[in-house]
Length: 626
Image (cartoon, rainbow, N blue to C red; front, side, top):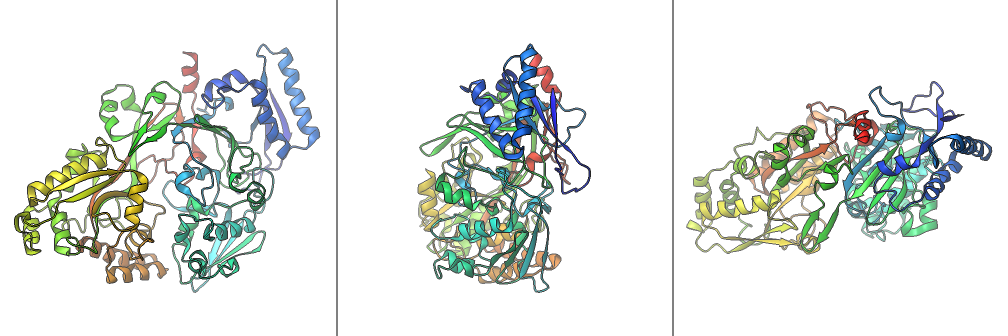
């Protein structure tokens, strides 16, 4: 039964035909089965109480009571006792979709410490789909409207104006305004908050000075709400990449009234609110989180799903990260699961799982970096010798069994500005050249070269990084007669030593944050003071090029600057580029709606609108009948 209540909600920015808010009645036993384990241990009364809470946010008291009463009356005569209310405000479903009560998507991920993504993205557990930023990214990594329906930039490229959706609402019913974004940006730049991504925003006028304590006045930061619907952001210099930065998850708005009321716990279940299509409904510690539809959402990215359940799958023991693996997926307790490389061979041999395996480019690069301010890697000849002694193609195609792509430059395939094939020969495998360079540097036949440690960050020996480290160890020994020991460090030890430039050499991955070369080139390789940058490599010409590029508003001209910067980085061997990452995921046959990108893939990226198009197909009905 559906109890229909009129509303003037409009999705996708269309201010056209009126739609309806539907209150339906669903058998709670079905909900419990499909939400496993999100409602484990919860009674029908608990579920009903949680759902009824949301009615108060968007229906007046009389309509709410009538709707609930209608459902309860229906329950009294229905064979299915214990019926519960269900709010249906999602996008219309395709013809091949299962009924609304089955539109519940379950995925595996680790349990976050909190959901305050703007302050600490690493411990907020990829919760970015709860927050609609000013700009968003689609499946082709193209900018699309988010909380701002449009934006414009001044002729000098330094003043950006964003215009908010006029009817945008938080999940508690409060309007989403430009003031929420002004507060959010100044909060994450406040040094007392210690936001790990504050440096991302240093192009904004006054941001660096405020974050680094040169001034303690937040009003000096160039972010200002002109009125509820208009946000103005000033940059120090022309900044072509600003919309991309504003699409990043840390650019989420923050409800000041919730922070001031609840402090550090403002994001927990019962306190946390969102401005996207979803909001947090429940959090069962150690088990799962459940996200339901935001009853007030009327922005450009509405969802088809009714629920998203995050099932926790990961713990940490010592230096090694361990996972639940494929068991929940194979037991039909989850609809998708990311696949580790060591599991792919078994999957490919399985007649069922092999048909459910998908892959796409993560837009990430794994590379070897050096401590360049001390011997022996202060000598570019040594760095180049290492580059020519390592066979990237053998690592990608043999050691990693073709599951990754060989890397020749920092920017990955399908990423803006990619020039890998153009500069393929700069770091090509060449044992003779490697030995010559090492001898010229004073280490003929490896004599006198110190035994060094190749660091890994909590990587098991069976991981791609672990397998590659062993291959690199062998290649350096066989080609250069250089001895390398492998050290597997825990996260804290590794990150402290990397920040202090104490790691002699290491492999590490960098995954893109936004689709512009500035992200993988300037943010990773531009010289920074100790404690502020990943690496100590420094090249003045490289720095000049990427500095020019970020100020260049003409895209083709910018790409030319990044092209030259890529060449310098490879020639000076700031790093040795090993492979570009492919992601692998198992998806149940009933999971549908992943759009195809322009390269023919069906990706699932964390920082775009991944959950907007997904829906559950009718195949789930056959599964439930088994």
